[in-house]
Amino acid sequence: MQRLVNKRVLLGVSGGIAAYKSAELVRRLRDAGAEVRVVMTQAAREFITPLTLQALSGHPVHGDLLDPAAEAAMGHIELARWADLVLIAPATADLMARLAQGRGDDLLTTLVLASDAPLAIAPAMNQAMWRDQATQANLDLLQGRGVRVFGPGAGEQACGDVGPGRMLDPSEIALLASDCFERGLLTGKHVLINAGPTREAIDPVRYISNHSSGKMGFALAEAAAEAGARVTLVAGPVNLTTPPRVTRVDVTSALEMQAACEAALPADLFIASAAVADYRPVACAPNKLKKEPHGNHGMTLELVPNPDILAGIASHALRPWCVGFAAETHDVLSYAADKLKRKNLDMIIANDVSAPGIGFNSDDNAVTLIDRSLQQQQLPMASKNQLARQIIGHIASRLGTVEATHHH
Ligand code: C5P
Image (cartoon, rainbow, N blue to C red):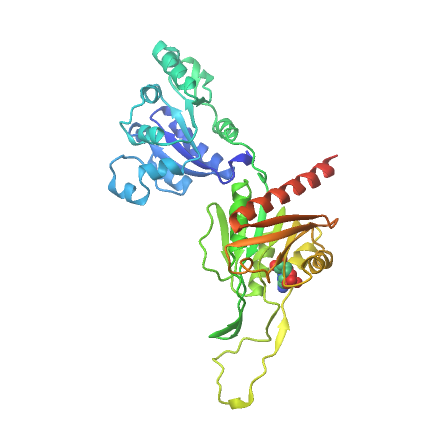
């Protein structure tokens, strides 16, 4: 079921008595981590209300092809592109016939035509209708086109008949839906990433901060989500949009960032890419500080050290696999290796911020990965997005071997 994490399932519901089971199916899919949007045929609405499925899916239910309000919110082409899987449950005999013919006479069939996502159907109908030659011919056609068919099961039917045509149980359908997806490198893992600068308030209008853009951390969050992980991204003040399928928690100060990271545990992997301010003013003045008492004499600001968020989390008994960053201007590798030991990390990512065109605010970066055994892996200059995918790949392969050794 872990393969459903972060996956977008477009659930089509057609008009059969089994439509009442679709409510349970929405829950199962969401419990497994999928995002679900529901499309109902006109007939389905005679069996179960859109309101029920809207409440369970957390999104308005789509019904009409020509509904201007729905089209404005998410047009049908957009919805078709959004889906990672189109799942129709229940699929009636009529719906199978319309799919087989390639019709687009309502929203659901139009979406199926417009979507490149895999299509799966869970047929549900009376046993005689299921056995009918026309239905069987449609089934062959659909299977021949690569449509996955879940069930139907056999047994007692709503009409009193006994035989094939019962829709599978929602839990079975959810499991088969998850089998439609490949396992990602980080499927089933919870990844915690922090990113960006922190701001340490001096008074209500002033603060101490740094130039971190947060780009590397956001790129890592996106790459981890692409690899199938559930991702929590704790972000300082940055000007970046949240990558798809990532849960973002916004914070301002180092203390807030620490609290948010600790609250997001347990995690399998923690990547600390944030540029946490090392010091903060001993207290934030309640009112804007005035220049007058100091005049031309200068003023002294008393600072106290901030906690080391990464070292703190790396010292927990049930700690995630911990990755830190070391932005250095000279003796990059020896400082980085030193930091790895001091903070008890599993890996440190060293980057030379003195080199032109890489580091803090730029779109490119070049880094060296150093692990506990001080083995080095150089990743040459690339965009932060490309680099993030490579870094996630390297980390995932180490995480994998760690678990394999634990199991044996
Ligand atoms: O010691 P230095 O700040 O160079 O270490 C950098 C690494 O430690 C980064 O991964 C950074 O996110 C983390 N760090 C932290 N809390 C701090 C300072 C740094 O988590 N207060």
